[in-house]
Length: 307
Image (cartoon, rainbow, N blue to C red; front, side, top):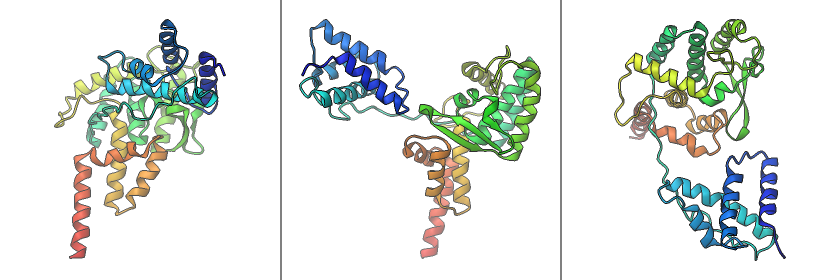
């Protein structure tokens, strides 16, 4: 059987996207791979060709190489299912990425309050209100900054006290809000209506359109510089995204202090925060010195009861 590799790849992408996968950049990468095969007159997918292609450029990270090989591996498996002679199966994990997690900056409640207070120095006033609302929203809900700026006014259900969020990989989820958060968002909506009556965006930027995520991060860095936040050992520059980590760590600390079911709390956080892999949530167990102290205290109490 003769297989048109490009047509098969397009069918593969269509099927995956129909099941909800975004596959950003996959089409371009697959086209580039097939272009490299055609240049050499190759009409099948082999393990050697896939490995050679995936490891370019040589100065890229192993994580990038692993991602490229993963994309080609799935396409090869699809083509192999149509015609085993047209593509070799590529074993998983032939390139293992070196996963390094950045140590988050864990803000105290006083630091969050200070950053929100400093937004009053921003101009024009609606930008100050937007940044104050953004910081408070991330700290109170654990949303990612990208998720927050993508919110529309209709995503806020005031009567229900929830936010409808579209997260990573287009996964929808519903976030319950504390009444104080609902009140703060309603107050912001009143101000926002005067400066941005023609946009559906919940958070608006300087020109009255949707708040740009990169602009928000840049403004936040300026606020951090003004606040002169103390450096944390082994940590990097404080980021807007770190507010998401603060929410998760505080949730786990609260569970430990209440002698609650920590595994159940983590399971809830997996869904609440839209994590694809539970390991992303378990990582928070080692992210905070305060959290590790609470864990140690709980272990000591447990063994004290046994003795």
